[in-house]
Image (cartoon, rainbow, N blue to C red; front, side, top):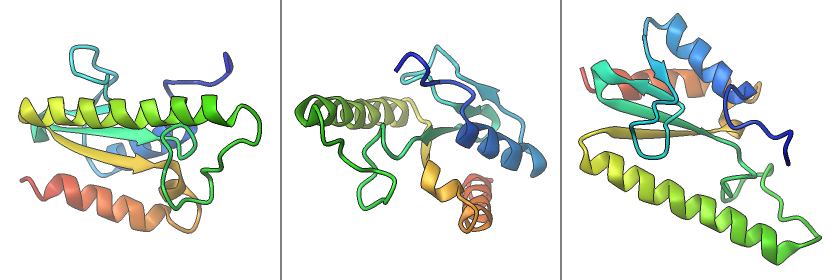
Length: 127
């Protein structure tokens, strides 16, 4: 697990490219905000979390498969990640931030354009 990255992952880089290409400027991994959001758009008071489907237990996703070995340990870990996601989102919303979550399955070849349009629309809807 030491090889698993928490910053600058492939899906995160894709989201950053989408946002930058659409004229958004942002900061990454701000440590002064709960959950250290992957992308922070201060102008829009919006944060974007880019989640891996496995690590964050994306329900109904083909990329989230419960491991056959040490199942209880993995389920505890994944459920704790989901719980922390909810806690951090609630804290951010209480601080006046909008929270957008993007899962890695939304950034696969057939889905990326639809996700890009949705993401840009979500952020611009604040304007």
